[in-house]
Image 1 (cartoon, rainbow, N blue to C red):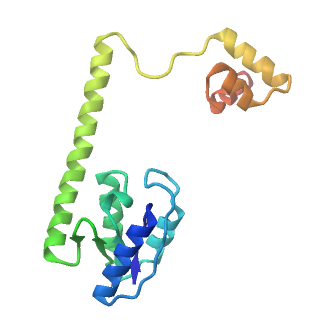
Image 2: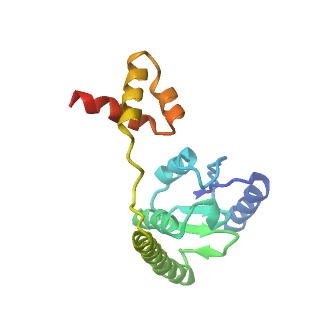
Length: 182
C-alpha cells in the first residue's frame, strides 16, 4: 500500500506513480488539496488512519506533509509506532533503509533543537520587552467600553458585530457580558 499527500498534483502524482511501479507496489492515493500550513487536512487524517503495519507512507516532498520539523517528526513517529515505513520521493528519505533510519534519528535531533531555539528566543524576547517596561498580554479593556458592549448586546446587537466594532474577540464580548452575572 502506498499513501501520498500533495498540493501541486500532476508532477507529484506522476512521481509517486513511477515510484510505486518501480517498487511493484499497490497504490492507494490520498490527495490533499489544501496547503500543509492548514490545520484541518482531512485527507492526511484519513491516510494516517489507513496506514497499517507493513505499509509505506509516501509523499512527494517532506514539506508537503508537515509545516515544521517538529510536526514532521510527530507524524513520522506515529507511523513508526504502527510499523509503517515513510518515504519522501523527492528528498530520497526512506525509513525502511538503514540510511533512512539514521536520517530519521537526525531529524529527531533537529526537531528537539528547533523547539529549544524557539523557547530561548521567546524567553529572550519577553525579557527584553520587560526591560523596556512592556508587560505581556493584551491591554485591559476600559470600563466605559465594557459598559457600551453590554448595552449594545442587551439591545440585540450580535457578539460578532460588537467584537468587530471594538477590535476585540467574540469570546471577549461574552466574557464582558458574563462579568456582570458573576
